Length: 368
Ligand SMILES: Cc1cc2nc3c(=O)[nH]c(=O)nc-3n(C[C@H](O)[C@H](O)[C@H](O)COP(=O)(O)OP(=O)(O)OC[C@H]3O[C@@H](n4cnc5c(N)ncnc54)[C@H](O)[C@@H]3O)c2cc1C
Figure 1 (spheres, helix red, strand yellow):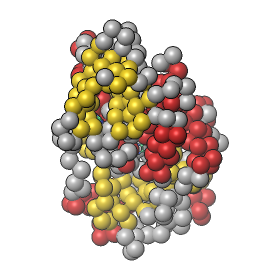
Figure 2 (tube, rainbow, N blue to C red):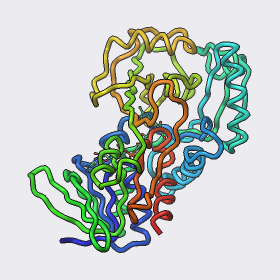
Figure 3 (cartoon, rainbow, N blue to C red):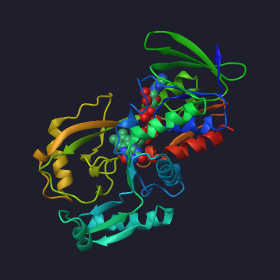
C-alpha cells in the first residue's frame, strides 16, 4: 500500500489551498479528486468575487478567514500573475428600511476591519452609476474579482512543484483507521480500487463533505451537522441591458444569499445572480422562467432592466448548514478527538473562495 504524509479529499479551491500549505512542510501530500480536473463543483459555480468580509459576526471564522484570505489571495494573484482586479463594490439601499440596515452594515464592517468603507449619498452614487436608483450606497474598495480556474491551476502547479500529487477521476470510498493513521480506499473511473495510507486526512469534499465524514466512521453524535443544498442561478446580461460602470453592484443580503447582484467577471462579462433556492437534488439547470423574477429583483436598484435582457447562464449549489430562515451558520472546521489526524471542512459556502488560502493555513496549523 502506498504511504503519504497527508491526503486531501477534494480538489476545489479549499482542498487545494489546504494541500498547498501542507506540501510546504510535508514531503508527500496527495489530493484525491473524483472529477476530471480541479475546481469542477462549487469552486467553478460562483460569482468569483473577492469579498471584503463585511457581513459576518465579528468573532466568526467567516470574518477572520475572509479578511485574512482576501489579503493572501491578492498577494497570491499579484505574485503569480493570476488574472484578478480590485474593482471595489457598491451595496445599494433603495428604501428607508434598507438605509437603516445599510448604516448598520457600514458600522459593523468598520468594526470588524473589512477595509475602508465609505457611505455615498444617493446623489453621489448615481453620479458614479447613472442608471442606479438608490437612497444610500456603501462603497467597499477592497472587494474584487478573480479568475477561479487560473487560481486553481496555480495551486495545482505549486503542489506538484513541492512533490505533491493531484489525482483526478478517483473517488474516495471509505476511510478506516490503521495502527498509525488512516487507510483511504479509492476507486477510479475504470473501476480500479486502491488503498493509500496517511496519518493526516483533510475532508474538503464540499457538498459531499458530510457523506465523507460518515464514510470515515465519525460517530453520529460527533457530526451534529446537516447540509441544506441551496441553489443559486445566474443570468447573463445581454447587449440591450442598462450600462453599468461598477463591476460589482449588490443589494442588501436577503433570503440566505447576498441578494441578486450584478457582477462583471475578469473578461468583463456581466451577470445577474445568484438567487437562493433550497433544493433536494443537485440539478444545475437554470430555469428560464426565472428571468421575470430576476428582472424584478434587479429593477429595484437598476430600473431599466427587463426580462428580455437576461439569458440563462449557470448555477451553483451552496452547502448551507441552515435551512430557510435559519440565520447565520459559521464554517465548520472540525478535528474530532475520536479521529486524531482528521480535519473535516463542512458548510464551506461563501466566502469560501475568498477565504480559501487562509483556511489552508488554518488547517495546516491545526494538523500540527
Ligand atoms: C452560487 C454561489 C456563489 C458563490 N460566490 C462566491 C463569491 O463570489 N466569493 C466567495 O468567496 N465565495 C463564493 N461562493 C463560495 C465558494 O464558491 C465556495 O466556498 C468554495 O468554492 C468551496 O470550495 P470547496 O473546495 O470547499 O468545494 P468544491 O469546489 O465543491 O470542492 C469539493 C471537491 O470535492 C470533490 N469530492 C467530493 N466527494 C469526493 C469523494 N468522495 N472523492 C473525491 N473527491 C470528492 C468534488 O468533486 C469537488 O471537486 C459561492 C458559492 C456559490 C454556490
